Length: 152
Image (cartoon, rainbow, N blue to C red; front, side, top):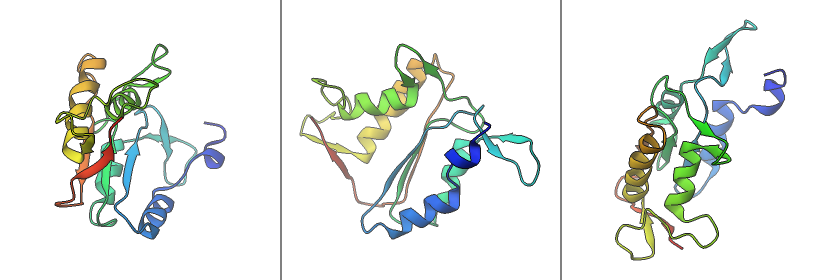
């Protein structure tokens, strides 16, 4: 936390970047509850609420899809065996991002992953990986646009 100002990015900066994009941005927020966000003008830190941050983008960035790693004040769990958190592990599995791995979220086996398929995969995988201690959330402001990625 000693270099938070040098390593963090503000919500305003994220919104500004997303607004410049011409397509429909997909944002993945993976931050631990115990990770902290600077609290107003004190040197104390407030808990980082990933779901609250995702909700803050609603209506501000049209056409966006936002996946948050956890609900409310839940912790985003990590495990050394995964080399990352449960949320990131689930996203990588869903997209088939590991060498030789099939896309777990390609439920229709059509080579395409929809927003709904990715959400369903992540929504099932993260609680399973964390023994029901973490529950990711998704905000979809794209409306009828469904196609998200090509599956491997």
